Amino acid sequence: MKFYYSGTDKRLGRIPTLNELINKGYDGLILSYQWLSYGENARILKQSIEASSVNKIFLVLDEVHHVSDELSYGQACEIAFPDEIISHRLMTSGTPFRSDGKRILGDWIDYQYDETNNQYIYKPDFFYKLVNALDDKIIPHFSFVTLGGEFSYREGEAIYEGRKFETEENEEDLSKLLNTAIYVGGEWIETAIEWAHQRMRRDRQNGFPECATYIRVPKIETAYKMQKRIYEITNQEALVVVSQDDPSFSSNFKQQGDPSQLIEYFAAETGYSATAWIIGVGMLGEGISIKRLKYRIHATNICARLSFEQDLGRLLRKFPEDNPQPVETLIPSHPYLRVLALDIMNEVSEYFIRESEQKSEDYESESSSSESSENPTSSQFQPISSTGEFDSHIVDGKEVSNRGYPTK
Image (tube, rainbow, N blue to C red; front, top):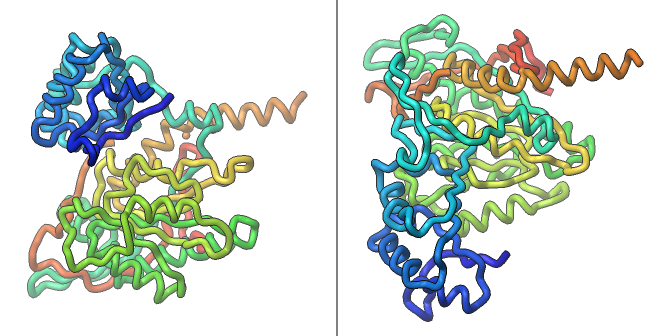
């Protein structure tokens, strides 16, 4: 099928009408939620559809969790695509929920009210879970490694030393430990970088020279500091990819080109000269396919389930296609992150149980959502130092304690 990608046609000074697209042999039109919500675009598109020779249209809304009927994206969709011009709606999402708790197009998606928890629970028509993808062998095996340590920070005149994730219960204190762990100048980050570096060296020796690591950081300024730290530790260059729409973007940040093109170039690199590191803030969160990503470091203070699952999805590509290698994510030993990782692995544990049973047969005849602030809880907070100690390996539906987990 032939699709027209939205945007103003420079010759027309507007987006083509549906009849113009049909006359040029197009079968469909691809729009972004951002474009649709801008100005009068939604109303203009609706009028174009009504004036066309098309009686009904088939509407596909991808990553529909972006679309709340209480916010601009969802309101634009409701304006542009009323019931009378829609034959069918197909709405897809790998993470069909919102961190703000708002409903996704409540009039278009079935919800059931949960009185016990005072929330609405969506009722999809079809589920395709990670366990199904593993069954169908369209994603690689994956696991999590947790990295703890001891953390010291200053708050005002007070200095707190030797704090650990496992001994803290207060959410505010845990947030301070997380922000100390991901402090670019600390030993925790150094240990995490070394962990990925040693693994990529091993993989390159084993015939996978273009394998790469994705590092998620909280701010653009942090991304460039991380780029410098990676070079200091590994003597390797890292690609920083950020969006000008990011709230922390500044004209002081110099990017070497269009971010989408940089991602395409990175994804297409092959051989031993391929860039081994890519650093992102939010732009790599979804809708990006880089098959050669094999490792991920969670160096951000975001603990929301939505963001966590989307970041995991960056690794779930078959590489190489004919012999896909398992992938790993390194996370801080923050209890919320551990719960998220365990929830995911518990979902897929059914696959591992079935796989183990099948191997035996052949021989005989695998939470809650919380989001830390991007800023420390106090303006007087200042990380001082950190160490990195491997805690556990979350794999095959269980968490295996593994102090002294090898970096190689």
